[in-house]
Image (cartoon, rainbow, N blue to C red; front, top):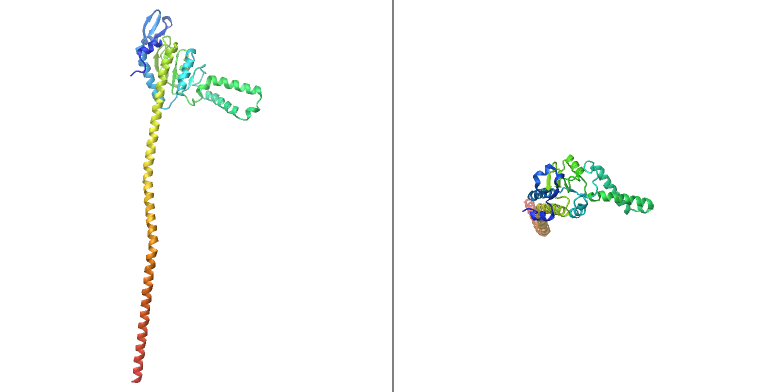
Length: 314
């Protein structure tokens, strides 16, 4: 099922292009007709392209990678910042800082400087600074926040770039192409679609059109994040089950060993009493045998003495 339909795009004014004299010939496949000197965009192709771009963004978000949104146009700033911040993706709505992608380490240093200023304001050393120094630092912090505040969480290069107007953001598009980053863009009739990996032919000036298309992309990203969360939960449950199965035989063995130890203790506690009885009976028997042997020896001695006396008499 398509994420958008023809009527929604028509109501949002996504079919209006630029004047005929401002058109780019490379946009010819996406133009439906000309009316009153204005090109009309084929919304049937727009619906298909929106679905393709949304599916690709969903897979990127599902893999846990970041997507950078770029919209420095006045009518798109508030819309993009509000929608994209709900899925915690980085975005640029102020002036594009040159070299943000190609010179990313330098941009990261500026972001770290902003974070260090935040830590400084919470430290006790902040109170020791003069009023002039505090004012300079806060102004520097506000300037960095305005340009780089929305990309604080972007610790590495983004995996995709979503651009509202590819003609206005040509520097960002060029940097992404140089680094091999796929570009998703809303392309109007006055823009060049060559070099854009996922072209969305639509009106990039109307706020309703921007809000509709950006909202569809954000919903696709949200779905990808939810699926990623569900898969991670399943993996955690499976790992817990495997760990439990490995521990069960060990517990059973310990229980058996405990039972064996209890049985051995019982046997040890019963054996001494029986052994004592056996020892007592053995001692009685030995005493009786010794007494019998002594009597036998006495009888033999007496017999020998009688025989000797009889021999002497004879």
